[in-house]
Image (tube, rainbow, N blue to C red):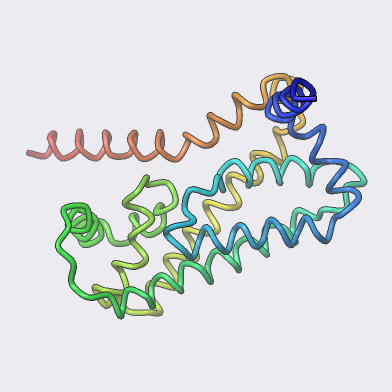
Length: 210
């Protein structure tokens, strides 16, 4: 019995689409509900930021590409964007009520926000740890609401559409199916790689100017 459970778990981790697609086909509306709730929780509460949204965006995009699954990619993207923006806005208004806190991590995030206001908010989902705090700090620093909303909306669209469509268009490739867990790991680490690369280029540019 234990061996069977372990084998099932290992098989699920190695080939998740083989298990998720039949469930999505049978329970499409519940699949929407679960995915949207997870998105809202991850976007709204810091203590839920451990949820693997990068991986879920890619996987759900892959499922949406399956024929006869009952999952529509456009409904998926729209729901993700609306709920992610709602969560980001909640963080912003929470920041308005945030009392001053002494923290090196917060000081670093505030400095980063002030120096790279637009790019930091657009790519906040691609910045590990600090990116989670940026909407809250934007509220605490009294960034104008309309400006924050527009910039963060662009960021949510870029993040959700890019990762979901990667799954939608490439999730069916034989290589991806064969090494799905490895691909998911790469997708999950992609934001960190993009952020580190961007920071490296920025540092090189600054050093060149100096």
